[in-house]
Image 1: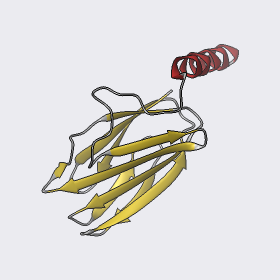
Image 2: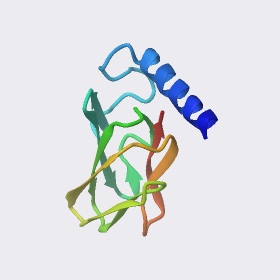
Image 3: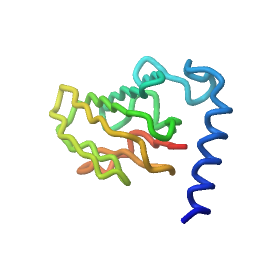
Image 4: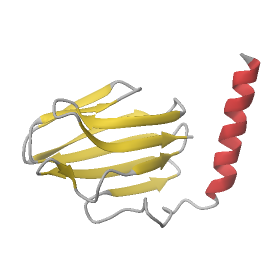
Length: 128
C-alpha cells in the first residue's frame, strides 16, 4: 500500500510539473470547432458532437489532471447512452440534443467514453 501511494504521488508530481500552464496544449489533440476542451484549476470541460455515426473532429485522447472535475457534454443526432468506462458514469442523450455528465477524475489510467448502444468510442480520457 505505501508503494502504491508513493507511485501515485510521484505521478501526480510529474503531471503537475509538466503542466506549467493552465491553457490547453496545441498539437494533434488540440480542440477543433466540433470537439472542444477547456481546462482550468477547477476542472476540465469536453464538448463532443456525434453526427452520422462519427465523432466530428475524430476520436481524440484528452489529458485530464488526476482529481479534476470533468464535465463531458455530448451532442448527438441519435438517442443513446453516454458511458464513461472505469468510472461507470452514464447519461442518456436524445437525438438532436445534448447531455452532460460530471465526475471527479480520481482514478488514474486511460478510459474510453462511448455511445453505449452504438458501441461508438467518442473520446479517450487519459487521467494522470
